[in-house]
Length: 357
Image (cartoon, rainbow, N blue to C red; front, side, top):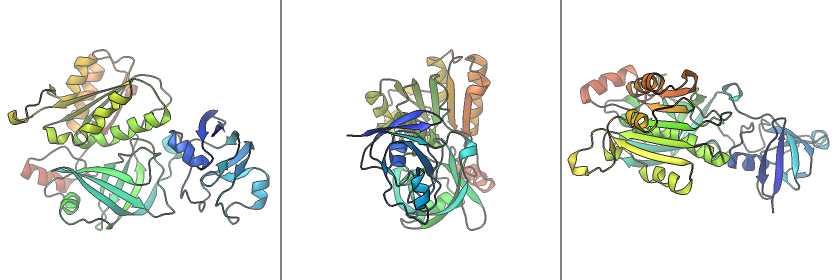
């Protein structure tokens, strides 16, 4: 048995089980309420219960006083519903709601998803959480003062670890270290969240989501966030790579349309060698999207990948498919100067540095 929770003044509602906190229930269903530590320490999740009964859980009196409790205040990361509730809390739905923080993070797991792609899971301290919008990125701060930026591949509700998808650029300062000497339990420093590439939740338009290479990371976060919300806007995801190995989470993406009727998925390879026997779509990924969607006048487009791909998609979507300019959202994976030199020498491409390296 669970309870309905209505959030004022937005009047969004969600279902809370008796054994989960109000914040956990909201995040699980894609509703972003303010929080910081998720451990009852910082007070950032403070809200007011307007109607109904709660248990305060592990909330400490030095953070939430008895007088506060008597007038209905609660720490939503600790409080659990004991009846249907009406609560007052602002919702986090814009960049202005996102505090930028600098935090240490431990390398929790390194997963070689492809020969040149590493999935990095970072875990913050037990009393810390980073609040972000689906699609944003963080900076990894290097010891020499430089920074490398990587999109968050996990949805905001699934924040036990922060997930990054990193492509190796031979000669790249950070990625060489990652692929050769970095170990689980190493400590990194990050700063974020950053970026204006995130799901616009106030629209009901169908979404065209186009990723190139590790640009799949923020697209994955956006799709998973929309699913957690119960958002059934039509979504067509295109993921492009040169060869089959570039589609490093293909099985995951293929499951989306099998499990959700409003999602379509199309992988596209541009340089697949003959011995791969690729039977799917070929060519440039944004041109495959145009072939299927010649009229984008009623859509939103979310595009993430190399600068050349993003620029071509914007030009062609607006010029040939009538996509409104203000409905094109993009994250371009640019390169740091030292990595550009390495890439010229090695003929590598499609990763993100300062934003990505």
